[in-house]
Length: 104
Image (cartoon, rainbow, N blue to C red; front, side, top):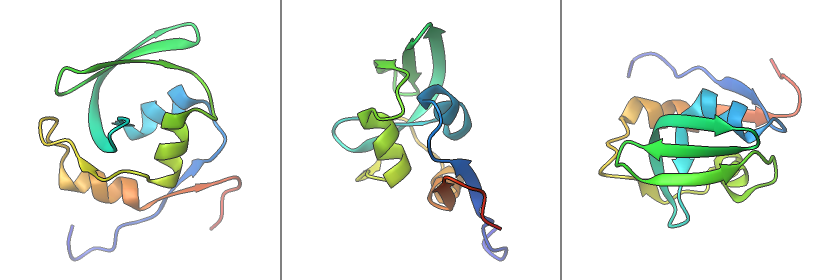
């Protein structure tokens, strides 16, 4: 995939957090690390996110939450070494365009 240019993915900017997590499968912790999501247990407007490094986060479905803003704005320092997020997944995430309309 190094020879081929990474295609841009378009994701709606203002969508629910759970829909965004289902597409991206990454979670930014408060320390700035990106964790790979192992499972999401939804219960109404709450969800329990379990990462590959066995950390658990309880989050609310909000478009303006810290996690949603950090994912859209790509505010992270590094990937979690215990989750072992593959390089292709990080490249795909960095090539994703968050927009209100689909631009082509």
